Length: 331
Image (cartoon, rainbow, N blue to C red):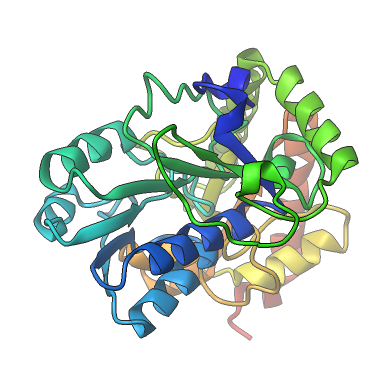
């Protein structure tokens, strides 16, 4: 991981059950270190950030949710105005789990150091690490903590970790045996960590470029088949593997269910959100019309996804919409 992300040393990493635990650890550590203060998160954070933030609010912290613009990018003017001497934590995701949009973490970090130099800067990097080149020294020099999950870059499920920049003190989340240099007690999941190491070692930037080509070809075909389609956030920087789109008049959950019956799995709602039966939170935060947001589907590609497979998806989409008018939600 230190080589993959150009970290200062291997000791910068503590391993957990995944990004959800790492995110919770971050907020729990802030609750122990500070008794009061302001905490800033974006309006599009994953539930594993939003829910711990709510817990801090219950403890008396001032939790501020910074809005995003119509492209899903954090409003830096509002963000700047919300920072102050009382800010103790900023948590902004690196890449969105619904649209794939990348946040300007370097610029955000510079603003934090200018206006709230003592604040801890955490990023939920779950969607970014393994899907784009990340250099902690040159790309994210002000990031103090970064959460990640192995399964997002072909490692095993149920393992991940957190990067902790040297000089940052963080209270342990789990106490007991003193593993992970006392930062995270519990018996190490050696087989899973071996899988994580293999996945990190085999990561190649060229694979990401090839994946972006497949995604772009898919979206060209999508527009050709369905001229009315709206591809969300296509005009801003986003992950190479993510395509979030809406077919007007369609109910996303029902179409996803119909596709699943044919062996094709697409997403609705947020990635890593079990049983999501509501419009993607991010699209609503972007002021996308509720009906259009409800129609959204998310296609997530991997390094092994081929153009032939995405062509099969397009064919199935066309067949389902032609043969099953009930999927439009007008019944």
